[in-house]
Length: 315
Image (cartoon, rainbow, N blue to C red):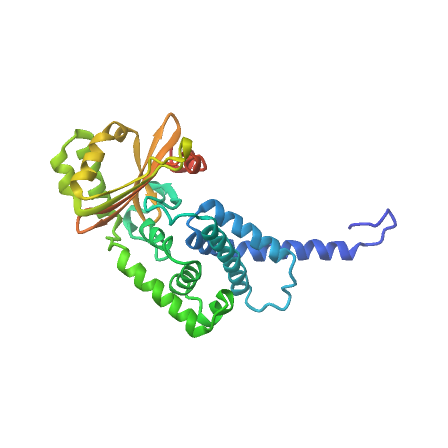
């Protein structure tokens, strides 16, 4: 029993408040995973997604939600507005269009997390190829597409967030959908086939076999390497197109192949290079028709420093 100043009077108000706070926290935590997923797809940044979830928590903590019937929908609306503001602020700060070599933050996990008997993509997974295209959309387009096409939120619930009519919001998503379909490469969802192709690529790179590299690369492959900003504001980032130029890049960096380990990168198989216990780069790939059609390499030290090598299965 809790007493008040030793008088023996039960502090029922304090007990009720503690119960309400615990219950409120549990209610929010039940939705945290979905909120993080929404924010990551909206922003393409793990750090910004966490910030958005935290800001949503603060707004939730200070709001009276006793009469809210659909808490999940209410929280989705709140975090959508937070993300939209972040996207608009990001767009306003940019003096130039998004660098074509930009690679969004990858979600990296140990390959051991996949059951070998169920090597198929999860229905809610999202690939780096899609996130790259989403970066080219206007903030309202991105929000409408992500909420409706990826999370099945009705247009009449999205419309107030983007401050448009339901029909105009539908048009936003439709315009975004056309751009996504036109720019996102097709991909083989089978992790086993992906791994076979990636193993062949790594073996050819390790051996310096140029012809074998070209054979496993799609003729129209696009490689994006995002090294982040360097001293003086210059960037070592690059976009390389075509099987032979990409194969030449692989030969150039063949010395790093022994440091690579296969991992899960977003919705597929990828490679994390670890040197002296530090993550030096992460590469995701898109595979279709038995060949690699896209490579997405993040080598930005600042963003890679947020990855825990132990979480990748590194000893």
